[in-house]
Image (cartoon, rainbow over all chains, first blue to last red; front, side):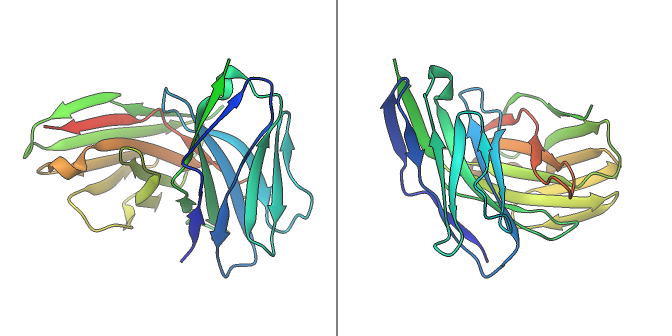
Length: 116
Length: 113
């Protein structure tokens, strides 16, 4: 079974600064996907970024980028030029490639607060 | 475009009462559908998933059940709610195999009193 660990329950950073959220996972699979989801106070789950395990290049989406270390089973999220709207819970998630059953295993989340 | 609808948004129910939460998807056919629960201050836990009409798989044995009476409809039910059923319930569907990822509904906050 897969496990996802987010060791930072809470973080805060000044607006416009850069912040990195940590995530580690444990799996015996070789092909899988990793995700970061954002859950703002509205509680809507929003996909932030996705990484395919077979790709060595780290995924980027505007101000969001990841540092994917497959051997170390590490998948951290970097938010550059942080904005007040980035305040939210952030969940790291793992998906084994299994057509017809794409279950997500979530970490316990990191509550990020951007300070004006 | 594909959209997912989930209702009600908020629900307060007494212990022992029945429950029915509904989720529908538009703009796609034969989606894989999922029910997750988020307890206060915790991550999401998979409850049920369905790959087709009438096909339900349960991840966690509990007081809840799920049904899929139509291709794009997924229902979460309970005959008698427990206090421990309180939480935030999210329905989701998978976009596809080429670019996998979930699209989540807006969620239902259930409080059992």
